[in-house]
Length: 130
Image 1 (cartoon, rainbow, N blue to C red):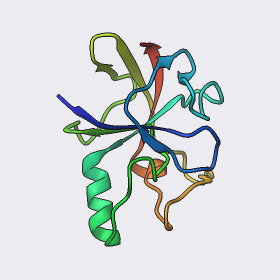
Image 2 (tube, rainbow, N blue to C red):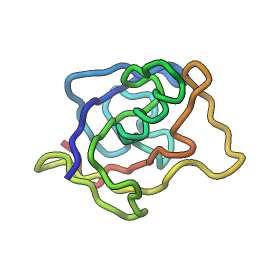
Image 3 (cartoon, rainbow, N blue to C red):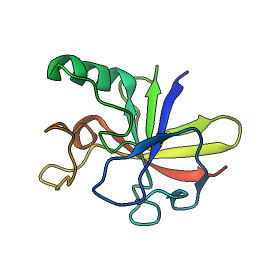
């Protein structure tokens, strides 16, 4: 079972997300996040383990949200198959719709030259909000 270590949002696209204490998941994504309702990739998730590995390689830390992720989770399996339903508490259910991005698909944001979402990030849709 995994554990959420950070929730992050941004009011504008192509800007770093910032950590918040709580969010409201609803149809289309996270209330107040710039990606809500824009594409089927409503919510983004990075595993803390993948971030930690990149931090070691980079030699500097990545603040929560710096890699454009909405959720940082620890203790999840290395691979989450498309279609997997993740439960966040008792109410919220998110469905894995894609891992990373298709080769050649642009990614418009990086942090100090680093971007993990296109390779090891997960994109989720909101099945049940709260």
